Image (cartoon, rainbow, N blue to C red; front, side, top):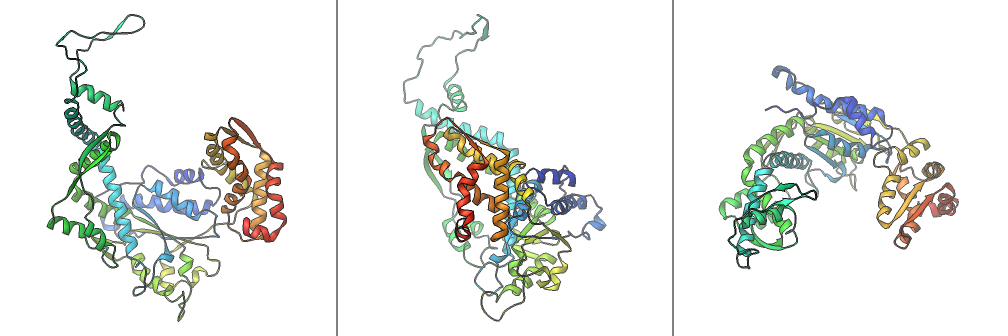
Length: 465
């Protein structure tokens, strides 16, 4: 089975897309862009070499708040393949309380199934909508038949609809009751009415209870219990709009071959899946005899076969991890990559260092990205009737203060901008409902007025900024 998820995006296009949301860090962007493109390149190689080409896993090293996690978030949207972001610190060595590392592969497969299922639903959406519409119209017709019809005459004369200029636009005959209801349904006129729909229960209660127990994730209890007990259905009283959504989902499920979906998801996850392993530095370091570090090296040993390539049992079948791409990230303030066990180090051959943010980087973060903080605050207060405008000097002042606080206190990167912007807009956000239709100019003096007292008191800055 072949698929080409990334063929439309070249490395240059991937970097350009990431540039729309992330300032700087060009080396990291180029590394992940090449890795993403290599997924497609490998699919074009002949069968004799394809299985021998292993993914080049990446470690992104850099302080907090410089864009490591944001690169992962944006990459997930570009990948068009199963993508899972997970924190390494949530796992523990086998035998300790916590999740085992194999659960990340199961979670990745579940995401793959959802991805393939969503694509299949999109293909049958028109047929599912028509079937759902017919089911809903049957119920609306039955209810309407008890009411007095709008027109009881037997007149079969045609109805003419003329425009303002007297030209006939249509000459439709009288519509039957179903077509009238269908038109009103599609126009949204019935969305606020309540109907009762009969839908199947999607989860078996007993399966939900047992599947949450440790070690039971790989068992398909829902399927087992579903074969023993008949599927239950229940009546729901909901609005017409919600009823359409429920019925479309049910009709789409009937039209989709779930066996084919699972088979394709298994293949796509094994060949094109990506796992972003955040906070890798939290499991680096040599094992301690006791305390919170007791299972650090154990997690690394458990992680090693997954990254190297192994077979993981899931409730949908066995999945091989040989060609899953792993992108790890960590600040590595206390530890360093060389503190990882040598075998794991060797499985991450590409290392990219992300640089700390400069004052100019802060200024660009406030203005250049498509989702910049300044645009967010303008949009957030617009419904209140406030028209927010920023001076260039005000933006420069916010950037300078964020850079200064990061240098004097703990360096938390771009996250410092969120803290400072909240302080600048705190009073304005509170008073906004009483300031309808007001233009507010954010100037450098306004920013200093809101922050200067806090910045001068270092002890206060530690708690507020």
